[in-house]
Length: 155
Image 1: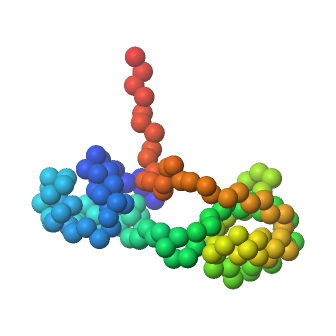
Image 2: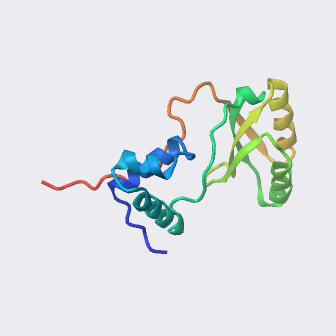
């Protein structure tokens, strides 16, 4: 797949959509100083290129009754991998699961209704591997758009 050519206007459109994915094409166009059809075309091209994979919302987990958030690292061996994946698939508390390199096999992001609920999840996952849990106290850098590093200019 060819790397899409993302310019400053596309970057601004992505920032706008990341902040409010329901914003109208007309308002997006106004903010980037384009016509609505031109903004719509740029968004369509970024969707076709796979840069934009979907539109989503951000939720307040505490308002949903899930005030306890944590990151879990799980170390397991391949013989227990299928059991772990089944447990993960059946656990609604697990928001994300990443297979990683290093001493751990997986990193999970979870939300629970209480510490007892988190403890219950740890017990369920421990049947398939060693679980290390870190509570999320605060999120000083919330999810943001990935950015390629700026190319340095040699003097």
